[in-house]
Length: 148
Image (cartoon, rainbow, N blue to C red; front, side, top):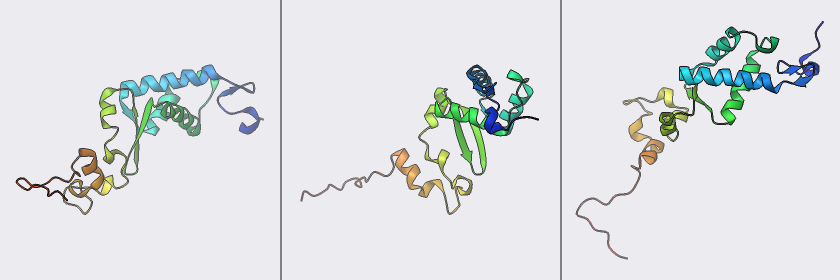
């Protein structure tokens, strides 16, 4: 008979005490994996943790791994990129990724419906136009603004 998770503390606890060393070991493994893979699905992260041997004698649940990834996200080490219903995790410490941070398409809920000839399209997107600096009113050439 095993005590419930609420009493024992879950996978990150040993003898009722939080095992910080275990958590840091797992976070480091996930960090190395994402640095090398550059991107990963959550399922691949789970498979990696489970296939890399039982650290600390624990079998980790999806929720445990989700909590570890969330700590890396909070520290801006990992970025979650949603494309339609797909979620990809990427290592957030590369300069190439930082260039993409402000691109409005990355977080757009309509990105799956967006196409060059569709109702939702980059040409008519006010967010993309603003990001590119194309939403500035420019006087046509040869016309000067009258002073009021």
